[in-house]
Amino acid sequence: MQKEPSQPSSIHLLTPQLANQIAAGEVVERPASVVKELLENSLDAGARSVTLEVEQGGVRLIRLRDDGSGVSKDDLPLALSRHATSKITVLEDLEAVMSLGFRGEALASISSVSRLTLTSRPRHQQQAWSVTAEGRDMEPEMAPAAHPHGSTVEVRDLFFNTPARRKFLRTEKTEFNHLEEVVRRLALSRFDVSFTLTHNARTLYQLRPAISELERERRLSQLLGQPFIEHALVVDMQAEASGLRLYGWITQPTHSRSQADQQYFFVNGRIIKDKVVSHAVRQAYQDVLYNGRHPAFVLYLELDPALVDVNVHPTKHEVRFRESRLVHDFIYRSLHRVIAQMTPASVLEQAAPMPHQVDMATSAVPANVPEQTFSQNRFYLPPQATSAPSASAVQRQIAQYGQLYPSDSGAVVASINEAMPADAVDGTPPLGFALAQLHGVYILSQSTTGLILVDMHAAHERIVYERMKQALTDERLRSQPLLVPVSLSVSRREADLAEEQLDLFARLGFGLQRLGDETLVIREVPVYLAKADVQQLVRDVLADLFELGDSRRIENHINELLGTMACHGAVRANRQLTQAEMNALLRDMEQTERSGQCNHGRPTWVPLSMTELDKLFLRGQ
Image (cartoon, rainbow, N blue to C red):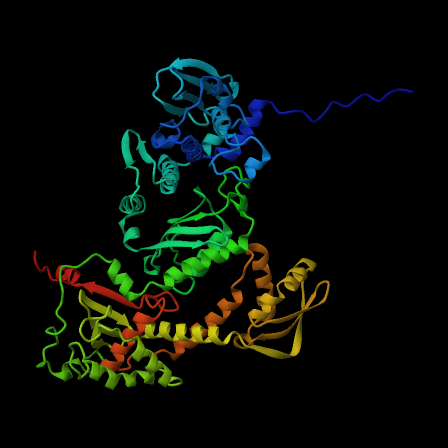
């Protein structure tokens, strides 16, 4: 019997050179990727000073020098080998890794697509040594060198041996912008390290170590601009039970941006982009941010390393939280609380002190101005005196403010009486005292620092909205039984999750029941959502629970309804308010959470200091 000829094997091992170049496609995308890996190695080596020099956007040259622990002579050739690292040794180390790098692929991948020279000298070593590798050859060459304590990595002619990869690079300016962003991120993650960045022999950054709070704010202004720190709110929240801590800076909703280009979130010192974090931040800013705008923030989350998996992607930008719902809820509640505590008093206190101090007792509109001058709905000046009102006048006239709340005027008047600041007679409250009403739309108020402009409809809309939300919270979500229960077909996985979260749905006003492996029935819905598409809402909630571990869709739908009701119930334009009503509205704003924006994210009040007014009229120049 004749044997069939054997077929040649179609499976073979890749050469180390080719394997490194394939790995380089994941790790080394552009010059910015090289800088990221090298900077992370320097920080892991304990460097306190890092100097980075680049030419032609990093394509021609990337030279990084640090004062870290260095690499010994015997380990230099091994440092350029794939999967060679000093960060981890066993699997248990990977489960609780705190270093920025740990995969051992960076130097091998970089050296496979460039001409790389690593020069290093540990403190215990008298002589510095360098190792050089060029592209596919991957034959490291050792040589003695002159070098202080620390390391220098020099990467020349990136992608010189892979022309196809080089063609995909953008212009020099674009590549350098990406590279600069990497330096900015790491400079924000390590305030205790000095960073110097030079491009084409021009020094762009020279950041000194920032230890004190003032030095950190100065670095923030250097990297993100002075407006960021001027509108920043400090965050420092800690949950002792779960071991979570969130701190950093977020900007006021009025300082939003058209792009999400100033959003930096660090987990145990590592910059990450995570959908759980992004969703929590969006939820915290939901009803104070204008449509299409993005908040700016620099936030740091600290937690047990065992509770987060950083080995998700070769670039290590993505992580996976073991308790994603706990993390989401902690971030949302922390930021939501900070934004809620942003009162007019805190905003004005954060602003720089003004040289002018206006005497409220002597500053008033001239009494001889004829009243008809301000008629025809253009500029309404109430007949009362425009100086600080007396306590008896306020208490006598404030009851008129209850007309803005026809359904519950007694409780509103009582709450306003209690909310009147103690210094409303002898001093001046944050938003001052009303002077006049402009075009039936804006309230003009005089404060100690200048003029306050208030959009009365937007301000009153926020006040009504917050009162309705509080009332809803106090009485919990009431349910309404459906005359005909709604059957909902879902997957087995969704049905299992819904059965596990029946208590959550009940708390939100939904009565769910599982009838089969792939069938749910809705028997009760929240009263406020009786006319909503409850089937799609339940599906969306289940999708959020799968994706994020938490969902606020039901609350968001109810809040949207309350926002619409508040918008229609708020005082309309062209309504003339008395001075007592305007002052009461100002006092209510000072006591209401998130009163700086209406439900749609528009600002409700704007301050104009005496210094700004003087500039308009060229006073003192």
